[in-house]
Length: 490
Ligand code: BES
Ligand code: MN
Ligand code: ZN
Image 1 (tube, rainbow, N blue to C red):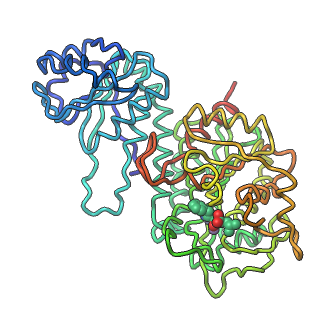
Image 2 (tube, rainbow, N blue to C red):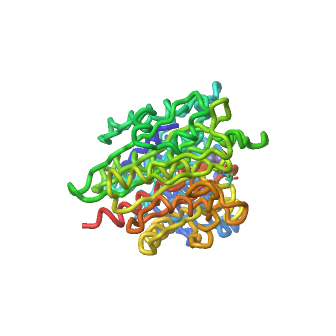
Image 3 (cartoon, protein in one colour):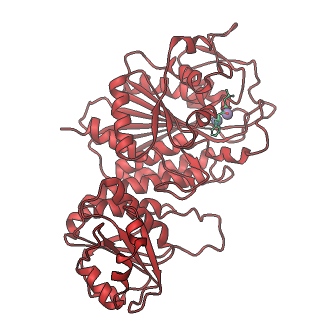
């Protein structure tokens, strides 16, 4: 849950190995040459380590992979984890190694001897990201209590390099907690309260209630939430760590705390997954948290639209026409295409209030993007190649899958309505693209904009590189990286 693993960094203390309880992890490079820690372990275990390293099992092991020995002779630990990792591994391999250890940690204390490894900080990041459980509602779960000690030759350097990475892991854990939380707990009010708590980190958090949204003219957003007993809210989080007066980056998130489909009701099977339909808002929140924790020297504003899409006597009907904050009218053909109705008003609000240098919206917007890209890549849509390439590069660096999709007039034409300025759906073909086209109608031409359809990546049914199954926290690291690359240079 919320707090990242407590990781301490210490001087390499070879004597500590024998008495360490829980787990001991040591690194062995591809050549199998043992470093001082390895030689110590080998002596203590009477040659077991050398035999392991000479074996074909070790040879077949990939970079960043682990072999574990249970109750090793000569050690107090319950397990010895041998990690194959070169002295100068790639960032991805070092994180992978960390993740493998993070997965194994369980409730144990863990001692990791990184020795001279330059990438101890990346290993720490891998451990922190992967060592996550959502136990909030398991009454019999063991309280996680283990501590990880990472021993390196220059612990202060590693600690300094790891600090901003721990901020990212912390942010990603927050995103996961929000996305995993069921909708009876994470109501719009509870969501807003959790965001408001982040003011303790130096974020300026404002919660706009329904009367304020009405005043602003956010009728499309309000039309989504009007069938629910939970009030619709927009939460604005400002982090102004950059130069005074510099236009901010705006991050916008779809926060549908539960999506029944509304009157265009979804089928029962799998509907429980729609607790994750606030994944865009969750990612924005986690990113803002990471930026605040590491005191980013950039101006970034996060805006999330929190609503619940429910059927009821006063829910929006198919065929209803509503007016957006921009002034354009929308014929709601399908009340299940609600995310775009939330986003279009906060996109307009962001431009109206902040004149942002760029805008990125995140949304679990369409099932169609899962058909197209599966769970490997988020769909990326943009009106600006430079901005888009910068994001794709950031995502690649962080190992977060992202794939650009097209936009174009032919798709936009599919939104034409007989009675209003547009319909809220474009029909079955190209469902993710017409959804993006809908959003683009609310983006001014001169504002660089990226839309991320994260329906396939926000929460998944099997373990991923850095996360156990369930909410992934996808996007926090990439967005943080983009902020570093574009807004913190100089
Ligand atoms: N929240 C869903 C999209 C979604 C589907 C997210 C599966 C995660 C997993 C969205 O609001 C939705 O219902 N979209 C419809 C749009 C359609 C009515 C045009 C869809 O994708 O079926
Ligand atoms: Mn829907
Ligand atoms: Zn939805």
